[in-house]
Image (tube, rainbow, N blue to C red; front, side):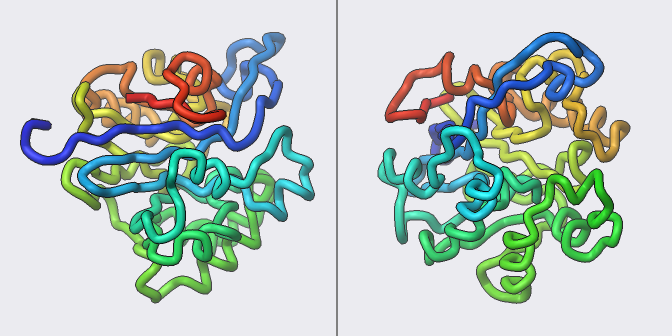
Length: 263
């Protein structure tokens, strides 16, 4: 149980949005005519003398080219809660879509001590598999970030993880495919039990109750197994935090501009 070892807090940091779109984009096959707002986030896990950052957000170059709504450099948002420089030793990359991995453009310099954790399956798909160059995958790619990651391969700074792995006492990476080939979530010991930074295992929280994922599906069968795995690991459904739900910003205590404490 969580009595042994540190308890962590989890923060959501909005760095872009809101973006308006159809509900069916984030909640498959429902609400073709309903509008929904979604945000872009990264996350911070703090405790036991550690600060672990989850995802790097959009890169500056990509955000400028695509005129991303209300974009702020994620490095600057992290600084709002005192996360900067050498304080970060571990950064988890949940998956290699542009809004989660693009910040590789800034992060290796901004956090010179940080090691980046990424599932090997995810890395191999986006960097090596020709299918990743096909249109439905290419539209979520960030070639600049991929080049930076490819150049880091074989160095101390990039850890390619094979499946579930504990990276700190009470912090575990979980291989949770479906949305992408090798998406990973982060299970965290908190005062409320086992919480999960689930990233895009769901765009909105409702998916964890109903099994309906977002419309961006790589492997639907795997995704169903992933939902079982996430629910089995978490202490309660409301402790599985999704990737783009506006509730992360609106329904939790605000600790800085566009930053909330989830638990």
